Length: 153
Length: 153
Length: 153
Length: 153
Image 1: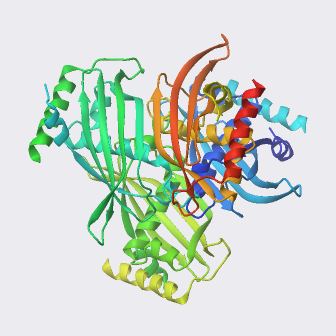
Image 2: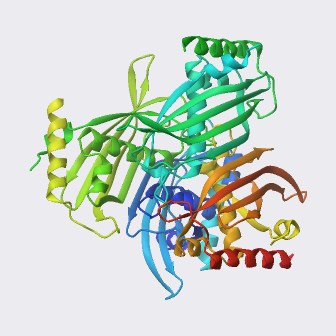
Image 3: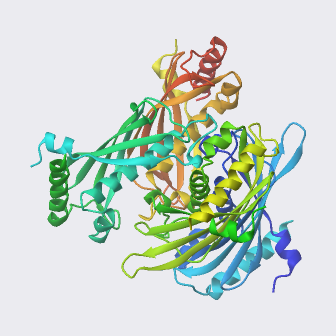
């Protein structure tokens, strides 16, 4: 099985361009936008791991969301540069958990501020929405993706 | 066939509660939110005409959007009361066009401000997305709905 | 101070009409839509408690979101009738926590399915986004609102 | 003044990664998502023209949307690669009109399908939302940006 160090190092970075539509009347990015960004993070992770989500669907599966936890530490604004990192926290044949960190990059000083941390929990379902077990082929590809991403670092 | 007076009077009103998530950093409702509201308007119209959209889908059809035109006259803010009216401008077996008006209600003075006017054009497609002709049963139900809504006024 | 029984019974119900735009290619409502619904729930709660959010802003405050937790138990579809209940779980001069339950109503059988449970944590900020303490006037109004809602049940 | 050939050639390309959240229960991208993409297109155009939108706001202006027209020719799905081109169709001190084309790239055959065409009309407003005239400095920067983008081609 995959140990914690491997899981932790198999991290993929996604840059986020804030859309003006994602801001709200407080002048900052609306908190619900982050939840959509997390999805972009795991889609990016899967692509980097050579298991693009379109392959997951083509194999007859979806990763249905069963839980979302977001902790917001600072606010972001239109024009800010955001760097999101995504990793797999747990992988089982019926469940996958992703963990995320979002940082605000200050391009002038080169420093970063932690914007938010988050996790998302998913169960494996078939295309009709019923709970399912990932095929061993897809499960092996995910494990191989984690190992490959970890070895790159 | 349905004459213009019948089409014009078969109008359905939908009240809209602005969501804070729909505002943007200009302090007003983001213009893309209106496009989602138009969809609520035609869904409400179909329900009032006794042809709920779930029935359209159950019969094997979708009304795919082929065109959207919105003219914005004034801006709206969180807390405003909006009154949207929807009517069918044209109905054919392969096409349906909806027209919309959005008004801002000033509850203190009892006056209204025109917020936006819009039209949306749709073609009939089957559930795989291919162009299709509405079944005569569904087409008749839509015509009957228009007549009924027009007679209520 | 307010005891737990009072907080628990000061519940406000918000019906939700699912927008077609909120569905996704899995055929169900996208999980991020629920996060926007929670905001509607607390806006509705504040209105029912006679402290509409526009009053909070007019007094110079915002309830900035610091945490969101959602547990998804079942999926919902376009056409479903959803009943969301919202209550205040904790109220302090610098923090407010809301708890939510979303149920799917089966109008034929009269039964309900638990769709999701959620909490949202907020700190009080001023209009520039800096942490602040609620004015005692606003705090008292919120406490009065909770007591009034609890007594109605 | 700028002639039509210059305006037409000052085109900026924006690639779009479809978000799963942007799909709907028809299995395709929801039409309202395109309206948000148009905004990304003009934000990208302004950046490429060296007049980033944050500079427009810093100068005390917003480009408020007064009209949106979208013609949808084909549908797109999660996983598709979209190429959006944006250009300025008209520039005046009180108004700016953008025109857009969205193409679906078939990476296997190297061919492209026209997905949608669109225009968006904007008036210049100050930060309180009142109609305003662009400062001559900002207007000159926009004209210079158009000339520079046109000369690159």
